[in-house]
Image 1 (cartoon, rainbow, N blue to C red):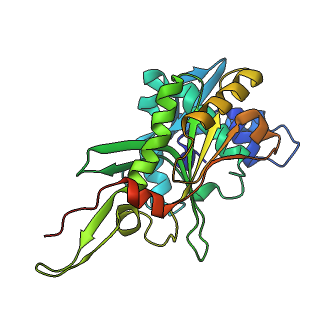
Image 2 (image 1 turned 180 degrees about the horizontal axis):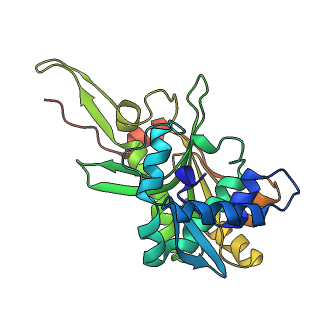
Length: 263
């Protein structure tokens, strides 16, 4: 689990490791203590009163050597994020993953996935990406706001996904007419037919404040040309439906963003 989500508490690991409706926290605590004694796991901070666990570099290497996960050479352990004070955010991301059915598809998740376009300077990290091994290579993007950023910054982060989706690249031999194609389809999600849906999850505040934040975000991104669904973490954990606040519209994106110049 730690190889996929990087950081988690005993409570979260118990949700995955033990059977439904059973409390195996004592078992998980003993197991983590044994891994720590072997130098494979460690704690670097807390979420409230609960220690946050992450693998050590040696733990990651042991996991990779055992072929337990697909190769992820650039993945960090999560220790730096916890030490920098981002532990509660990472724990909330793990809660989001578990609430979305992460126990069933745990190895199909990656966290802190960078999306960048060098030519435009656009670069941002997506909190979590779910890539299901289906015939259509279904991909879902997830952003979690733990109530720590301004409303304007949250809206900008969502609009960044449209900027990313709207960028096109020119392809063709020198001296030919050539054609343009979406950057994401050529260089990132090559098997996807449409730009992946963005899921925004709101957490870290009382429910009525999260509902207000949800409505404000819907207003701030009105007219966006990528598919955006939003929910609060408590509603997601209760299995309540998502709210659609953005619709995928590649034609509108193409009108909004300039075409690249051919060679």
